[in-house]
Amino acid sequence: MKNRMVRGIAGTFIITSLLLAHFVNENWLWLAAFVGVNLLQNAFTKWCLLEDILSKFNVKN
Image (cartoon, rainbow, N blue to C red; front, side):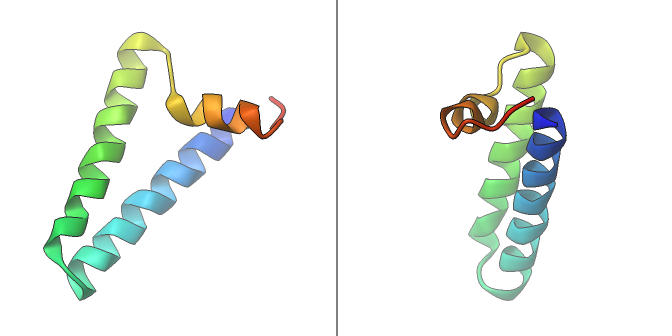
């Protein structure tokens, strides 16, 4: 369940940043880049900051 939440939140952040970049300011693309880099580092290290944050809020697996 937590893995699905991480993917959903990451996807929402990327879509939101793309919309904000299109309608507000192109600097919002840095948010999409940040999320992408975190997903890539998770693929190699198997550590995810968002999973740690969700654990602090007692989100179960």
